[in-house]
Amino acid sequence: GKGASEALRSGLVWVSDTPPNLESSKAAESMPADELRSLVSRGLQQYVEERGNASTSPAENVEGTTQNLGDPCVYFETDGTSHEVEVELPRWISGRYVLIKFLDTHGAQDHVALGYVALIGYFGRHSAPQPPQEMPLGPWMRRSVRRPWVHGGLLTSMFSSGGWVCDGRDFPGGCRSGLTDFHQTSVFTVTFRNFASGFDLCEACARDVDLGRATETAVLADIEALGGEAAICHIAC
Image (cartoon, rainbow, N blue to C red; front, side, top):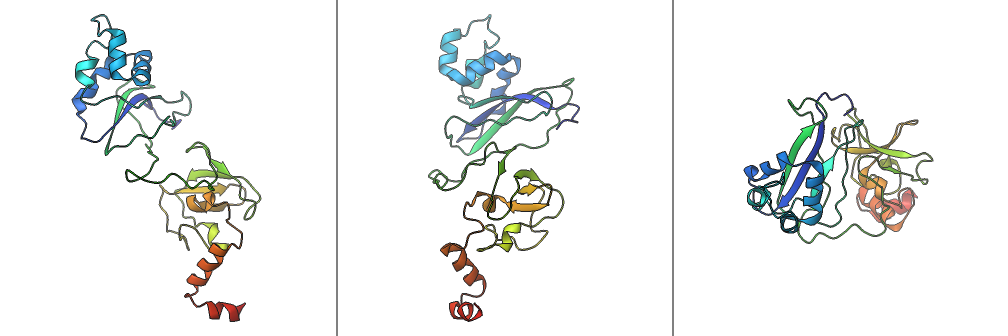
């Protein structure tokens, strides 16, 4: 964050199916930013061929020391003010292990201050993509959404250390995450909040374009919540 004395400035990311060899990443420590960008954009083999692995190159040992890791998929640099960065991969990358190599900081380099690291994706090799009816929410850390059927204001993503409950529970079908009361979330649970009113939606509710509408799916969910007795619901109506 902004107040960190030694906020992380840059780093590399590898994704692999086998446990990464940490020693193999050390060659990147002496490489300048332009060399690292070139390594990521071209891939290890093309990078070495173009550079010729010359002794004058700052990456003279890159071929021998990083071949066990394969190609890094991301080189990132955090913002100089907010100390945040978000990178969207150009293609899906699958693997069982993730290695994040911290290279330097915005300060004196004597330690690293880090708030959090988030990896967004799917579990499983054949996970289906997001349903097409879901509304894209934009960048992960700075997302916003409007759901006029339930609230007239802008809802902005955030992490909250205070107790909150999803207000989607008050609409047909209830909360899409099953939240029914306070203290069912943690500090790592994203909420979409309208700051003026304190209105909160969980991730699942924020993604549901039908939230607030009495759709067949929502009505059936409400009937099931009553105990699955359609006759009782009919009489109550």
